[in-house]
Picture 1 (cartoon, rainbow, N blue to C red):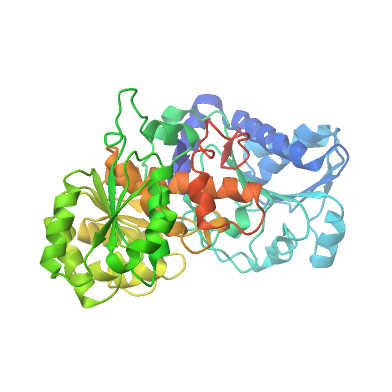
Picture 2 (tube, rainbow, N blue to C red):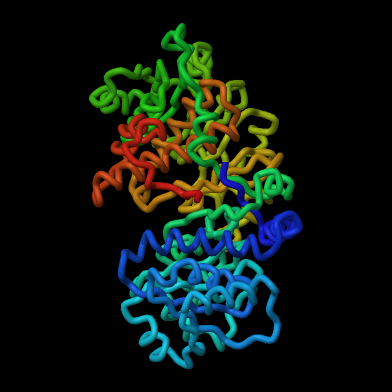
Length: 510
């Protein structure tokens, strides 16, 4: 798994590492990890220029350039500071002995751009302990550390980002790559900071897993290994229903595609028997696209209770329920939804139109194994607390789940999953390739399959989000533009970590 520590927890782990190995050893290790990434992006001849701030983040920059010189032409700009740790003083001495050129900090943007011309830039200005806003005296430096103009490596966290919340200063550094030390910080995985982090590496510096695990775990994130441990594996003696048999209640004459995509997501996630219950007016469209999945027609004219009774009878042969994608928003559908949800005992995932019907009936889910999967707009209505302001997603999901007891997956570039009993899970596989119609329906199908295979709502949601993102990243890797929801569904099997032809897609550890 990826350890995700708050700045306070990271400092506590750092203190334990210092007590065991010494501060100089940790700074040397940090320099090695940073130097590895610089070599990977600099090529054999490009110069390297670092801006070193007054703290130990600046010391890490000196340590990195000491590792890189004389292989590279290295220059470091730093302000004089009376307060220096012994480790930083030692790093500066090693850099000087390695012929790293030291210059004063540039006075303005023009000087900074001239110094950085043609070079790989290293941001060692501010670490995780810094608070926003940025000091005015550094803004001319952070503005030129911009991955849209040049290659930028940020040490620990791009300067101008809040390491806890992901909030971003107007003049924050935009990095090409960020090497965060010992453990990831939540701000690196949260919007809007995501747009500033670039490729994220976690550099191990001698703080072992036991030290990281001993810290309060307010946040968590899966990696490939942890995801594979969650993923159910089909037993040799499985039949089609024991392999996973979700019932999908979805679709309408206006939106049959949502039900189709949900069914495809469920099937490609490994379900052995997918049943789709849909209004008669939508059934023909579904049957044109679904060959292996069973389509059951629900009467458009029968009483709501008659439809509910039919759904309950069908569901006796299923292991989970997905309800909502493409359903009508009319009162009759709302009544069917509410009555069925009240009587249903199977683990359930609710999305899309289902969230509309649920928004005034949240008490129906109390104590039931279920997960809701809203995007920000749906969450505003569902939570009853209005629009989700930037930087408040963690706060908002925690408040909602603690109040309602409903396991929630809040979609976004930084999808969050929380069940009120442990850490907030941040999905690290988000990608803009998912910003296309129907991908949420595919995710609902994936989660429905995982629920039917025995995963808890929390595990089905976080594993589903991770897998969904893997498939979208794989699709984008293969097709730079024009990824559609069906691509994501069809590539689920190919995108599994054990199947991918490369692993250059996620948060990485060195």
